Amino acid sequence: METSSRRTRDKGMLTIFAILSVKCMQINAFHHPYSSWFFVSTTSPSRVAPLRQRSPQLCLSSSPGNEVIGTKKKTLYSIESLLDDGDIDGALLELKRLEGGEEGPSNVGEVAAAAYHTVIEACCAGGHVQDQGRKKGENGINTRKVDLIDVAEDLLQSMNNATAHAYETVISGYARRGKWSDALQKLVLMEEEFRPIGRNKSKSDEQSVPSLNVYQAVLVACARAGQYDNVTSLLTKMRRRGVRPNVYTYNSLLNVCAKDKETRWKEALSLLSQCQREPGIDPDLVTYTTAMRACIRGRRSDKAIEIFRVVKDMGIELDVYCYTTAMDACAKGKMWKTALSILREMKEKGIEPNEVTYGVAVAACGNGGRWEKALELLDQMREMNMKINTITYNAAVSALAKA
Image (cartoon, rainbow, N blue to C red; front, side, top):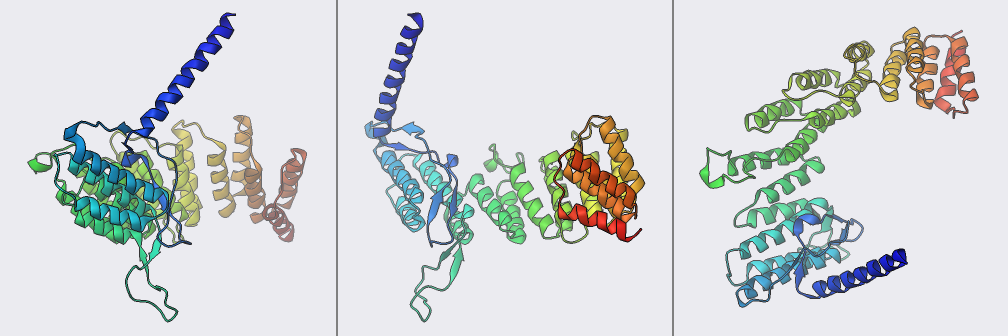
């Protein structure tokens, strides 16, 4: 009886809560601009699709002093609704109308800034749209495409008092597109606009320094473009401004080195050295393993094995990925004995090798011409019902060819 009564009570409370929620949503409400992100569908010009639904954040007061603010916030809600419907052109028109409205209380400017943030975020996360100008091709259709990041840049320039959030959104947008030079230039302008506390009293708010996230975005963009001189100088500059890189910053840069088409093992070792010297930062297993990958890609298996031995001496607990990376270095460096030794060590420490681990072990034996060991490893894989791919078979065949 008590359980049944409790269920009835809970059901009644949920019903009341649902009714109150609906009533609150019927009042003029607006959504906080920072809670939403967008992307642009390149198959449909000027269309923006929402990544997630928004939820009401605030119910507006109907007092006489809030009439102008209420109108502004209704326009903000209209802008977000247009973006939800994929109409970025309509959102830009609403934003222009918002700025052209009558002056109201002081926090009307905050509503206008929120509207700018919403549209700038949508543009920076989007792709390209057809040019809205008069120039058309022979078929009467606009032929020139415009990157929405350029629209976001124009909006940033048109803000009466550009905010740190608007700057960082545009900078991150440039960085994601690989436009490292534009991102770096805009970051320099932001550093001048928002000086550290003590140098410019008018900008002594909490966002006077660009955040670590925006620095990381520009660093990665520069690294992907091979601009490692700019990476080094930017790391130095951000330290001077009191923004210290963390282990994720270095792991991200090392990952770029490991995936670069060019050989970046020297840059990777330099970044690893900086990470080890950085106050308050302890490189983790991902840091060392990623540096090993960069060395392997640069055909410096000896350097990768050196890093592996250093990690073992430090007492860091290794995982299957680190062991497999070390064995891959052995395979490419024709060190089949070391590869098999690492494989035995894994098993002794209770770390189960996977298909990739056995695959690189077979490759190491294949490169060393040890066909007996290669076939033995294949038999072990079959006994454990592991999937053997074509690359592993080819490595075994290579070993047989060298016999």
